Length: 391
Image (cartoon, rainbow, N blue to C red; front, side, top):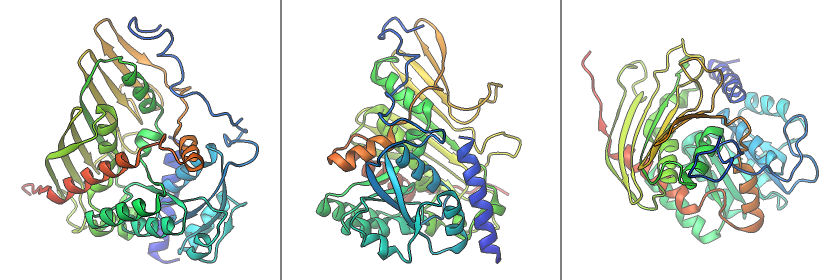
């Protein structure tokens, strides 16, 4: 096994492990704080958590380069999808995927999947700069597409994707898992819509990550391949900013990014931050690769939502004050401070996406929102001032 294959295997193993580790207020309807944010799907879950009964759609996976592919697949399965086939150029990644999903067929090529008229959706966590071109091929083949973030790595790619999506009317979805697959964030969305903290003024999104350099493939360190740190990690934060401020138009006020501490990887970026302003509120974003090994999680991801009548803080992965697990949500209003249990919240993205595929609707995420979040991340990345620190 060569070093590249070894790195891929370590990276995949760590990614899958991390994914696996992943009284009412007076002014609100009775019980809203304790109730699940979304009603459970009509599908009855098996012991594995997968829906039982006939599948609602058939789908495939192409490109397995990031461990996020497993979360993407599981979301669609929970929504009623049947994983039919998959394809990866890398034999080691294909073998690991086949072990996890033995009932899915290993296709001989990407084209075999694109030519299969029974397939309605293709999901991908390929190398980031390859995701948009694949999505274009998928849409032109008459199928819907769900990419891992970043789903698009340049403004030129975005223009091409927008053009083909408009022509084909297919769904181009990007799985922003920090919102779609985090129970505390789903719950926060319900509370904001219910008016729990008044009108949202600002979001502050922090996305620190552990680097784990020895487990990363070569493309991870090449800005041309992953799009830059704001394009990559920051895409989550732009999605949440638009969602919680209910902004439909926005602009990047200022941004900066740089490689502050990893000269051995000259094409890498380890820090970035952004100020953004929309027609529904303002936002601040900070992302980095400096999570120390002493933390029990890959990153102390946090989201603060400031409203006119209170605020919420979400500690998504870990509470360093000592509470076990993740999905911690704290709400402060004019009466009290509450810690809200999010353990029974159902993450709806997979079910909503399958509904959208069947009904040609936009309940999971509007296409305009998907593209605007990406556009903001790409513009912030492109105009970012270079951060240089004294050595």
